[in-house]
Image (cartoon, rainbow, N blue to C red; front, side, top):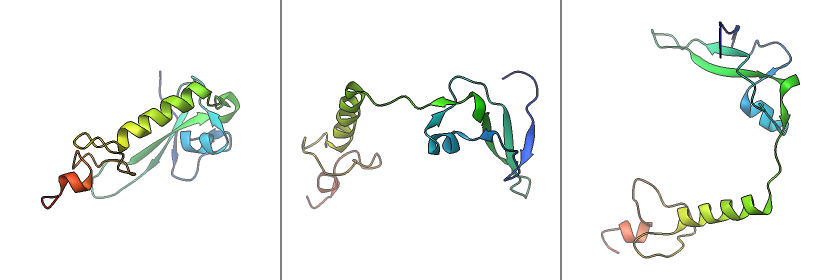
Length: 110
């Protein structure tokens, strides 16, 4: 990002700009372009404003499709997040980072 970005008030951005989430909802991605503008929403009481970065829709590109290799990698990543390091079982849910183990292993009764 070089220079000064145009700043728009929250919900008042002109057509042709979108946030990452809005692009994703259209099955698009920024595609390597720099941030084109930003939205700011004041929060009051001396707190800094909330900022959302905007990208140009005309320069956005389609989302890359998931390949079989990416699906396998995603499944392996999710399996690792569900596997308890203490009992090595699939907990059926993502292990909370605050516990570090599945609920039965973290429980003082179990």
